[in-house]
Length: 235
View (cartoon, rainbow, N blue to C red):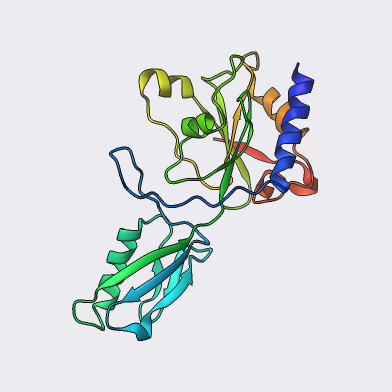
């Protein structure tokens, strides 16, 4: 059983190389359950200032999370809503124009994904849409299989230094007791183990170190350490 699951995870992670999810449109904000879209790296924006077309600009959110616009120079954009960014730009342009009226339009959104694997109905890439949480990502992947260990789900994340850090999530308490869910970031891996897997070190050895393909890319390369062996730090 464990051997088959290891092979399955290897195949599913290998799919990250070729699968491309469609861009996700920003939330319209309609309805009480809507989540406002927050800007991400590589989103393309158009910034306009009414009656000051000389500073109108089409920009992309840079890898450091900022945008570069005339006069205002570098402005933080990643993680902000469109309206929050607009207000930031109004403050910047107020140094040059009287009562500036600024508009920000999202032209295209970055094609970012997370990966959900293990004991879910449809394992694979899931588009990172809005404030995606671990449980929501599992539901996007078809939900848990009956064999899933829902109180011990693993989140594997790039720590910002291209090192993989793993933590354990209790999603059983999220959907049964309403506990706070974990917000996800681009290229996170959510892995739902089988209920019989109990030892964390055994999971790492059988389901990550031996299973991750050496040609993994598409943003998930932080899972591979020196000499193509996975290096994971637990916190």
